[in-house]
Image (cartoon, rainbow, N blue to C red; front, side, top):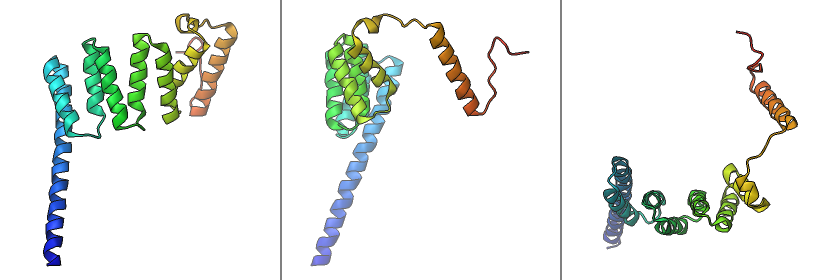
Length: 182
């Protein structure tokens, strides 16, 4: 009797795993289909494929990020924000939806929310350089976002010295372009 129960349990488990694998495969298929349709210009078809992929895989954020991209193309930024928030809820330790949301907020002109988003990105992954630069730029004031930085003679010399040092450390000989002999 216990052997029969074990076989039924094992069969049920194998069936559930096969169903899960099929759902994940179909989600990946519809995500690829969404990208193909979006590249072909079929936005409605791409959106439908994206919705199917989102429904089939409750853990994947790629389909939601692709859906957000489609909403941004259609100038529906509010829907894009909702898709990215759902992606963050699905995978709260993935920094990419946070970064995409912060960039979207920056494009919408909501600087405070963008800075908060960039700080969230840096908490999850401190190696994201763009988030570090943008979060520091906003904290210095709005003028620093608009005005380009002017380089002084001293800063140009420092950059040239850093380039020379990096080139030497990389193992190649440094020759400035103006002094190289052909």
